[in-house]
Image 1 (cartoon, one colour):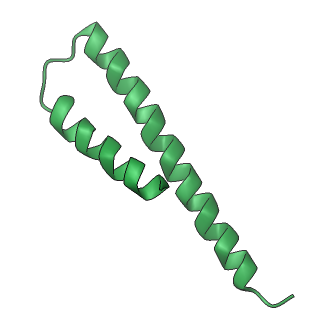
Image 2 (cartoon, rainbow, N blue to C red):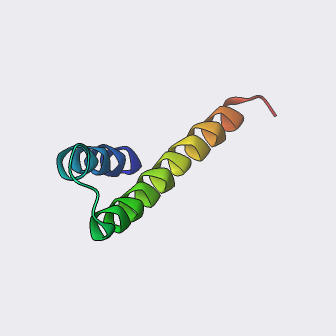
Image 3 (cartoon, rainbow, N blue to C red):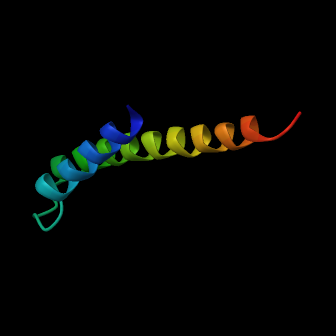
Length: 58
């Protein structure tokens, strides 16, 4: 779920923001998208770390 969202957000970033003129509105929209990217990356990192901890013997 988080990986799919992250992949979608990164595709949107490539398509809608990279290489285009940075107007004020576009910069704010990109900031919101980047916040979503960071959010999904954080959840993936936390999930991987949790799985690693759960894999340890008690």
